[in-house]
Amino acid sequence: MSPDVPLIEMRGISKSFGAVKANQAVDLVVGRGEILGLLGENGAGKTTLMNILFGAYQPDAGEIFIEGKPTVINSSADALAAGIGMVHQHFHLAGRMSVLENLLIGIPGKNGRLDRAGALVKLAEIADRYGLKLDPDVAVSSLSIGEQQRLEIVKALYRGAKLLILDEPTAVLAPGEVEGLFAALRAMTQQGLGIIFISHKLNEVRALTHRCTVLRHGRVAGRVDRPAETATAEMARLMCGHEIVPPAKGPSVPGSAVLQLERVSTDGPGMPLRDVSLSVREGEIVGIAGVSGNGQRALADVVSGMLRPNAGQIEIGGKAVSRFTPREVQALGLGRIPEDRMTTGLVTNLPLADSMVLPRVGTEAFSRKGLLKPGAIIAFAEEQIKAYDIRCPGPMIRAGALSGGNLQKALLARELAFDPKVLIAAQPTRGLDIGAARFVHEKFLALRERRCGILVISEDLEELLTLSDRIAVMYEGRIAGMLDAADATVARLGMLMSGAEGNA
Image (cartoon, rainbow, N blue to C red; front, side, top):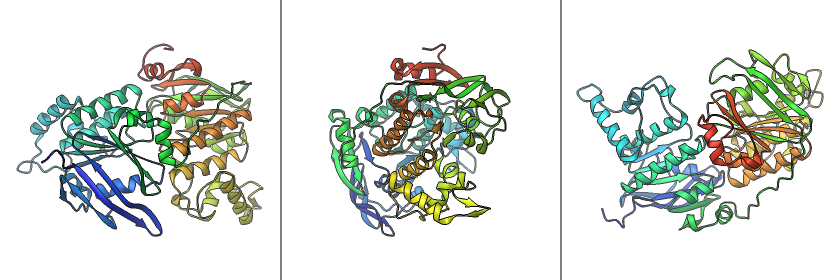
């Protein structure tokens, strides 16, 4: 193939869902040995475009060319056969099976038997070529998040991928794991592979990609030929259509503790807490850093009243939590923004108005003698939609029809409307574009000024460094260290996240 012929070319791709025009005449080109950044706000059309390339959707108009040849991709099987691999944010792995068994799933064997010997040889070749080493016999359930992602990439390469689509690949990785991923991606380009890198982390996009295509409202809003030489502010302006100014954080003047954990331990699924002591003071933001799966979920659940500890004590607003139910901690003044806004945050099949009052639907404001007050519920939702610029047709739209950014705004509106003493927010901007993330950060900082104590659990270290007054790092269910934000760096936090001893 001539080096001038693109590896992948999408011409004039359009796709509508009813009245919503998700993609409008989009052109996208990826060459051999090239990493193309695909940028855009939430709802800009990135996911739809990649789903078309991977065969999940069929375009209404436009063509796809692979190595110069027009190609129809009707399914993910067609995409894989054409050399297109995709690594989603949520991995598709069989946890009880080994690394080698996961590689062999869906691949015909020889004479009805799995070719384990051939798979081992091929796995070793991929490890040597790209630095993606994995133990073939280890169970996937025992792999770290970074290793699981590595396996997803190896699966695509094992199946002969010429183009790899990566959707927010660094969202759950520690800094050291990000460096390892980038080294592997660069090694792939040296072998002639093409990569589409989707990320809202513009510093990573600038560091890694060769070119960028920016989508806005389903159209190509611009292209960046030299990302490393392009200011982050300019890339953000292309994405959002206007300048993004970072929120200003005033000095911290913390008061007394509004959330106190004393030697708390838990049982249950996932990584339990082990002797965790932690405080959040009024007018303070405490960040929780850590590689995914090191006890953050248990911490959020026990503080939110979803999980009862088997040892230790928790106080909210100076009062001990005794029953450990969501209703009790809410009554003590705790607001909660859960990690999974689509399942534990809002009820996506209900109207938005109903989801926005659900935790307090039994209060006098929204019901009387067991009967709902529909007028009050709708009025509350309309007020919050206006105050938070929640972009939707109205309060009766199904909550699941909103974009991720607007769902997060709805959660913020619901919790902040009742003036919490303490707010716990888990992964509050995961998957949000730079504009939506800035909106969330502004609300947190305004709440801090109103003397609320805020606990932010995030795997985005830049977010924690932007917001926090202090940052605690979790490792294997314990607090591995606590740093004042002024003394914290990505490198120091990364050491603690990887299990380094002491306070770094």
